[in-house]
Amino acid sequence: MATKMKKEKVAIIGSGLIGRSWAMLFAGVGYQVTIYDIIPDIVSKALVETERELNKLENEGLLRGSLTAAEQFACISGTDNLKAAVTGALYVQECVPERLDIKKKLYGEVDGFVGPDTILASSTSTFMPSLFSEELKHRSQVLVAHPVNPPYYVPLVEIVPAPWTKPEYTAKARELMTEIGQKPVTLSRQIEGFALNRIQYAILNETWRLVADGILSVKDIDVVMSEGLGMRYAFLGPLETAHLNAEGMLNYCERYSNTIYAVSETMGATPRMEGKVAEQVAKELEEMVPIEKLPERRAWRDACTRQGMKLNEHLQINGTNVVLVPYESKHVAKYHEWMKNVELQELTASEPLSLEEEYQMQRSWRQDEDKCTFLVLDRQEFERTGDEIAALIGDTNIFLQLPPSDGTDGDGSVVGEIEIMIAEPTARGKRCGWEATLLMLRFGVEYLRVAKFVAITKDTNRPAMRMFERMQFSETLRSAVFHEVTFERSVDREWIEWMRSEVSSYAVIPYREEP
Image (cartoon, rainbow, N blue to C red; front, side, top):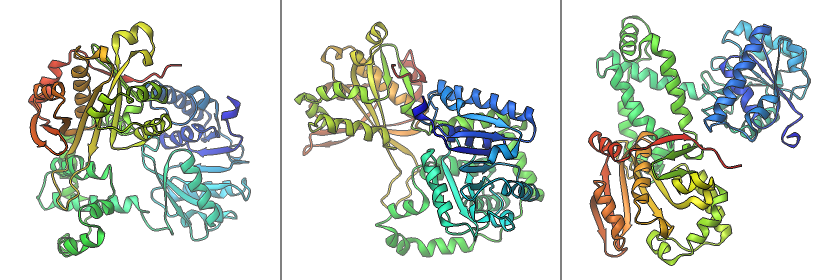
């Protein structure tokens, strides 16, 4: 265990949700973390809550970092002594309430305890770093490292320097954020609202105007984002989206800049979120989510955010006769032997790979954001032996396709191309492929929000063609050149109910890798 730990110290000032999240992220890679708060009882409760959360994440297969939950918690301590917390720290992350007077007082105290090598970072979403650092002796070490709540699940961090922050501290902060698994962006200078909130406020302002002008209801406004823009921007930012929606960005500007400018000119003045419109928005939101249901809805939101962390790395799906598990490096040797088979190469349109190339392929599948892969196990064999390799019989994949990038907006739907391969001859003809495909389709609907499925198979693969027809897919294309047949199926309530009736056993549980 000692080889995994670091000697460097990180101090977290503030023990709320944000502070505890930062503590877990730094502990996840072995930093020695000290959580500070002003009251001993608050510190003790924060440590209890942190240990509980780490264990919960580990049980759910969502623990980040390179250490176990127990190892991570062993890196975390607490104190109500500010000097003890920050003295000797490589990095200090401040997470106190958003009051400028509190921050100024705190940084004044910290300034007397730290040396020239400590980065002083604020989690503030409100204040530019110059506002609380101008009078400090160590002001050149101060910056903002603004996370998105909850930072454990949302990796973006905005790094914002004050006018006097030295570049080496900004660069080191970015390096640390990358090391703990966050996704930092560095602003060249401080600006009100940083980047995220400026974009967020622009969206809020226009949605407010649309409600105030009676164009859309609050519920429908949120659907525009959750079922449209949000799904698109979960994969791509607005500028790359524009780049893809034409023949490059310059072509996009030629096509749409006049329209965008004309529409933008009609948007009106910045609204104040107050008065009758605020009351109406609040009323409609409380009809959607009553005040007493807010904690429950927040938990649902956080669960949805957690599901974005490459779901299939952490989950397995148990059916009646098959189990779907993530593709791990331990599976590669057997998979490589399968793919030496000429028949499987023909059916899957695959080229033979060396063993090293197969390992590289496995790693790329784990990293690809647009591919969800599970291996198929014979459940009876797996329960009998506990050996995934012995029980391995095939694989199934969903390739996620973004909305059209041909210059049209499309409907924002996620399309998934489904694949299934039962490689073990002894497992064929036992409906293992049927059940594994249905499990994967249901997972795609419920967890990946796929709205339409596509299946492409060789025109010589009669069993696969019959299977997709029985699953209510329709043939949409037949290629004589490539000897392929394309099937499609849009997701609707009736089909979902049919799938559920066909799958008598379906349980998505945390994946437990064998020791």
